[in-house]
Amino acid sequence: MTKKDVKTNLLNHSEAKVRLLGEYLKRYLNIICNDGYTKRIKIYDLFCGEGLYENGGEGSPLVTMRQIKDIHFVNVAKASGIPKIDCHFNDIEESKVKRVEQSLKDKSLYYPEFGDLHFSTEDYQLQYENLLSQLPKLKSLNQKAFIFIDPYEYKHIKASQIKNLMSKGSSEVLLWLPTQFMYRFANNGTPEALKDFITEIIPNFSEWRPGNVWSFISELKQGFQDFLGNNFFVDTFTIQKDTNTVFCLFFFTSHIKGFEKMLEAKWEIDTEYGKGWDYGGNTPSLFHEHKTNPLETKLKDFLKSKKRYNGEVYEFTLRQGFLPKHTNEIFYNWQNNGDLEVLTANGEKARKKSFYIAYNYFKTDNKKVTFNLK
Image (cartoon, rainbow, N blue to C red):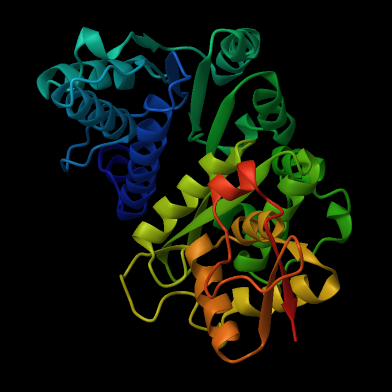
């Protein structure tokens, strides 16, 4: 694979990356556009790349605009109005931005009624600083932001920047990192830029020795979570290009419903474990070493530690990277085997299969039932 191939063709792992972006945006936009609250949505793609590649592959700008176009015309058909969706595509290479602009025109993916469309060729740091000044205004205007960061090198990014973006306004961030290369360098001649990046979220970096790239990703995720705090949600989606190359998307949000939608997008792509995409499409998945259901083990420990309400179990399930339906399946099995007792607020036994593990109960009735594991 030559450098030209890498730059001018959308590689398979990149295709999986933008597919996840599209799957998530489809859910995210559908929810936000119909929440009856949001007046405008702003999407920022800070390293937008080519847009359209020589092998016909579509990059993030085209995938994003397709989702916007689809939801717009679906809602027009229903005669229902939706918020305007503004898009801002940036790349420091002017030729790439021009190619994006031309591709959107050629494929008729943008109409003025969708919202505003902006292009820029600025350095990431300048874009980041501009965003920091703009984001605080969004909440008061009932607007939301989605920020996609796909850097050419990890030296462009700092964990504190992610935290600042999340803290300044009503925003969500999707970050792409070359974790395989980061892991390799972390164990052998760490560059200063990587050391600076990791030290922010792994304070004991000098003593840190992850056993493989998977534990590197897992501990990096936990590092992000610890750094951001419990008011934010962090999850990952791994993409294995080949035996020795693993990349990772990190997703950040302060909205538990948005977090659930991202998890749904992951499970849409990897139905067995919801973790990632295998370059070869092999089965069983990359995570076939899990001989027992990892969620079942974690739920047992969680329930045995103290009395747990349905809202707590809902949040716990999502933070483990699973969906409410997975916990419901486990609980139903335990209930049938006589291992789980579900009690209402007044101490009576709840109806069978009444677990109330869902966002609507989390929001309005998060202490409807408790669970006793026998």
